[in-house]
Image (cartoon, rainbow, N blue to C red; front, side):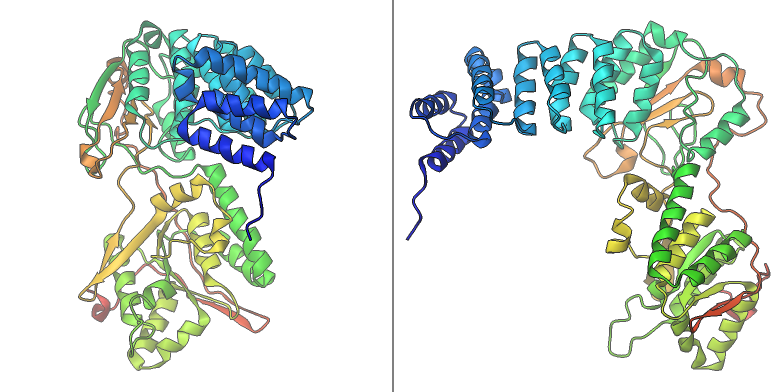
Length: 530
């Protein structure tokens, strides 16, 4: 037999129905009837009414005045009954207050209640200040958000950009362009219009320095990951703004500037490598992984790390399948033939047994050891830690189809991990035994800032064809003219392949061993060439 609802739970159910039907009048009737009968109302009952009163549909309808009046009355009654407000309560009162054009009341409420607000709590207050050109108050809201770990999204950043541009605050426009870069790949058409209006304005022509060192700015860009320098506006004078397309190799059809595939910055790279090391040493034999870290520090000229197990076991789940040395060798040779540099294959030492089957495989193993193409991880280890750490620390490519969705890698869950993967991970497949490598993209779909002062801003598109995407190309002709005698090419590419010297290394702790060879750059044996 179904348990009969209490009058309070029945009321909550009926208020929920009113919410679904957007029926404010009926909800108010139910609420007032419950008050007259002395129902024991909870925060859930009050929040249901407040949610309806503060809904955009109601506040943009003829019922707005009724919603405002009843909403504030409900909140007053809630306080009278000493019902503690929740984050939802504060959010809904913030919406009502800003609808009444009183964002000050909303912001004071947020600051005074001791409840951790969310973006939805702050957003109506921030947008209201921006709409009323109360720029300092808007900046105060942003600072309060930052103190509570609440991150701005495009709608809020676009509003801050608009008000900062309207009041000629060039430094803040610059700051918000960079914050926007960290939030979206492509800006909305509305945000693009805000940005375009700024660059076409009088104040934008006045901001910037007239003299700067292009080479130093280029070096700063590389430290920042390759796509921006964050050193402020460069150049003086009118900006030229065009909507352009970007070629498949990253060249701008508007100004000829070369866009780049953006990496995480130097600080993030070091923190990322250290995080991997810390986690690895919690899960691995500490001395083994520490020994590997020291080895990596002593070696510096690999351009690619190869996840040997991932490639050797690729598509081998059939009756006679096993570890495919041929697949692994073909990937190694494909990488070598691209730039005459041997990659580093990271492989668990149990996989070395696969090389013992015939003389050809044994010769290949010895050759790899001699030319420094193999690092064998110790028994009992997880080789994933080794290849990931090496690729991050050496700032080089990582050849693997492992998307690193494993719970281990979820610990790195910030967006910079995805950015790092885009810049460094090489996927692969095989067509009739020939490896096909899918290299990182030639350029990143992100706001990019040049060492010469130009900007390229991608506009959001539902079309999957990147060649059809519109970009804003923003340049000052004076910047290119004044710097045209610079001996360096305008093309700026991020060098991600450090050089490593590989010598003999063998260790044995707790029954584990690591095998490496002595690094030599030499042509492979003729029978290894493809």
